[in-house]
Length: 335
Ligand SMILES: Cc1cc2nc3c(=O)[nH]c(=O)nc-3n(C[C@H](O)[C@H](O)[C@H](O)COP(=O)(O)OP(=O)(O)OC[C@H]3O[C@@H](n4cnc5c(N)ncnc54)[C@H](O)[C@@H]3O)c2cc1C
Image (cartoon, rainbow, N blue to C red; front, side, top):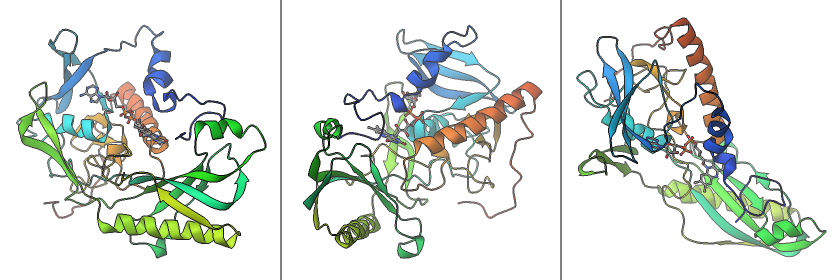
C-alpha cells in the first residue's frame, strides 16, 4: 500500500524520504573534512576515566574484519532505539559496569512501540479517489486510558488508484492505516541476552514487550468512532483487517530505552540529548522519547537531533562540555 511520502504520480517508492544517507550524508561528501567510514560497525564507546569523557569509538571494519578505534571530541549515537541502546549497554567500563551512562539502571527500560494495522474500508456509496491521505486524529484524552490513543489515515487502496486520482474517478474502497500507542513501563524493555552472541561476539539484544488488551480496545474504540462519523455523513461502511499484524516491531517505530528526563534517576539523557553522566555523548534517535504518541516519529526525532547538534557544536567551539549537565532534583532511585 502506498505510504505518505511523495507526489501522487510517484508510484515507485524509493524510501528516500526516511533515508538520511540520501538526505544528508551524500550531500556532505563534497566537503573534505567530512570522512564517512562505510561498513564500520561500532561495537563500543571507549570511556576515559581521567577526563570523564568518551574519547573514542571502537568499530569493526566489515570489509576487512579488522577492529579499529577512532578518536573524537564528541560522539553522536544515532542507530535507532534498539541498536543505540545495545551499543550503550555493551560499552561497559570500571565506572559504568551496567552500560555507558547507566548508573541508575534506566537504560533499556520504557520501550514503547506503535501498534499498526492495515484495513480495507468499503462504503455503500462511492467517494472520489484520494490523491492525498486524509488524517483522522485521536479520540479526546478523557475518553481513553492514560497515554493511549489511535489515529487513522485514509489513503488510496492501490498504486493504480493513486494514479487514477489524476482523473475524476470514484471508488467504494479505501485503505485505512491505524497507529496506536503503548504505555512504556519498567518491564517493557531491552537488555543484553545472557547467553546468545552476535557476529562480533557481543550479546544479542533481548526485547521484552507484549501488547496488552488496552491496545486492541483502543483500536476498536477508534474504528467505532470512524464508522459513527461516516454514518453521520450518510455513508455506511465495513472495515476488514488485512492480516494479523498487531505484534511488537511490525511498524518499525520503536521508541524509548534511552529516555530523556531531568533526573538521572528516571532518564538517561538530559534536555540536550546528552548522557547525564557523559557530557560528550549525544543520543539522537527515537530512543530519547519518554512516551510515544499515535503520530509518526521521524519529524520529532529530526527536531530533537537538530536541537542537540546545534548545542553540541556551540559547546565544542567553546569547549564547554560540562555546562550542559541537567540540573536535577534529588528523587528516589529508580530501582
Ligand atoms: C517501512 C517503513 C515505513 C516507515 N514509514 C514512516 C513514516 O511514514 N513516517 C515516519 O515518521 N516514520 C516512518 N518509519 C520510521 C522511520 O524509518 C524511522 O523513524 C527513521 O528511519 C529513524 O531514523 P534514524 O536515523 O533514527 O534510524 P535509522 O534510519 O534506523 O538509522 C540507523 C542507522 O544506524 C545504523 N547502525 C545500527 N547499528 C549500528 C552500529 N552498531 N554501528 C554502525 N551503524 C549502525 C543502521 O544500519 C542504520 O543505517 C518507517 C519505517 C519503515 C521500516
